[in-house]
Amino acid sequence: MQNTVRQRRLAREIRSLRDAAGWTTTEAAQHLSWSKSRLNRLETGVAKATEQDVAEICDVYKVAESVRTALFQLVRDGTRRGWWTAYSDVFAGSYVGLEDEASLIKEWGVQLVPGLLQTEDYAREIISTGLGNGDAEQVYRRVMARMARKTLLGRPNPPRLHAVLDEAVLHRPIGGPEVMREQLRALTIAARRPNVTIQVLPFGVGVHAGMDGSFILLEYTDPADDVAYVAGTAGDVYVENPEHVTRYKVSFERICNAALAPDASQAMIAAAMKE
Image (cartoon, rainbow, N blue to C red; front, side):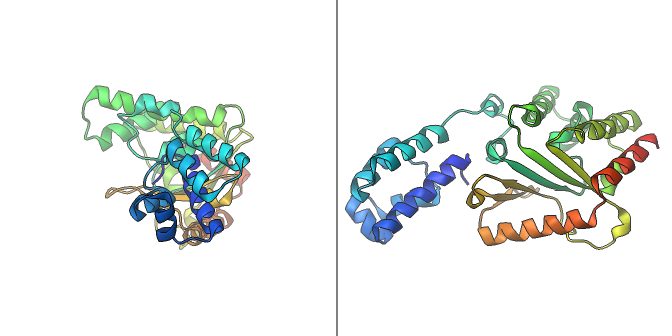
């Protein structure tokens, strides 16, 4: 899985250049004097292409200068350090880098408030429990990393966030009444942002399209880059196949249609806050 959308896009462009040249992977590798596996790794994004790799490809495929320049820029942008590198001890996977470049984030939450909407105390309770009430410094680092993630929604030209929460999320007493009350209040405040939409799926709906569990959709200006993400105890799953991503999009739309409208959802959150 690529660390950034730009790196994934670069892999796709390298593959497209070979297709345009009319060569098979074997033929292209021979022209490049590379092994077939090396070219496959670059085209699938398993390996990150360097500027030297791109220069050789452009020479052999006889690529126009404007395309060459654009590809070099993708290489440079793809290796750019993001804010999350300061928390490399916390963020081990690709998700945060992908989230940072998304234009639209869609999240279906069954158990918890989405990370981008969590308060510090709510996040601390979840993280501490997940670590087995472990090392205080480790808990602190993870909480601060999650709070740093939240700044994504308030930066210039922020992504849009559309979160749908199961009603159970509003009633699960994480951290006690005061922590929960503050978390619900934070949801009502977040929903006032022009780039945030929050809906609640009430218990009364019964069976629905989100029964298989939580997931996140990361969408970009180019739909070919869209990714579905599912976190799990056995490891995180990134879904990139366009057909499979579309299935998640359809499921999310069905969940939205079954959920309360944003205004009615805010009323339900406010009522839960008073309990």
